[in-house]
Image (cartoon, rainbow, N blue to C red; front, side):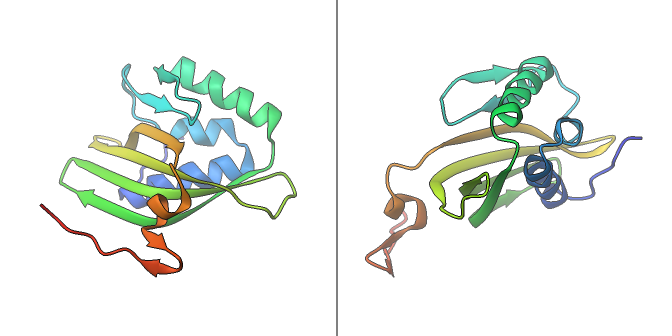
Length: 146
């Protein structure tokens, strides 16, 4: 059965829920049916194609069966056929309650005949907490657009 995702947010929620359940089948079901799908883990290696992405997540789940990701500070650009989400990920591994991160992630979604799907996921370590949250010493850092 093919799940049709009505919105990019539905795809994103399903992606992170599949990670929390270590459900490889559910995780792979959110990806676009495209030979050029891309996943970049914080280690920096670019994985292209469903086979490479599936094997990387299989390995991650084998080593970390309990992995939860909490999202915050989402920025979204939505179009009719393409949507880009930039989020801050905080990782919780195993039974630990200590957060790991923050990580910066960009998720790109494509709308096709079978609804919205994930086209690319790129996650990397944030340079420091302030750069990920936009805060210094508990206060938001003003931003200037040029």
